[in-house]
Length: 143
Image (cartoon, rainbow, N blue to C red; front, side, top):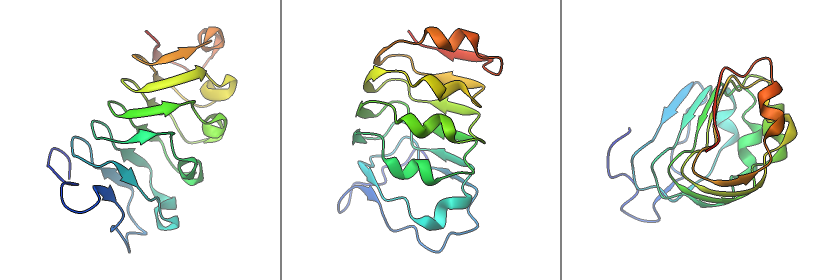
């Protein structure tokens, strides 16, 4: 459902996707969404792509409940605040893309515990010296 103008009518949020307990991949990139409610039904989700929308505010802590995620792409939104500390505890998360947001603060020390691809570019983050010592990390952008 990417590259549409979904989110124009009503509140502009992703709230009405119910009964999708077997859903493994959800790509809603390049739409007009500005909010999302992550139902417990999404716990089996492996890929969540919400890039290039209109999300703002903090990264929702509900994302930390998605223990099966291998890919999380929230790039090109208006997300602000810090990266949740617990994001590094998502043991299956291998690909994290948070570029082109308004994120600030320190990059969490445990963020590269499992992640192989990390894109934090075009934010206002600090720290990151620990990123170069990760044996799993194959690719990262911080600039």
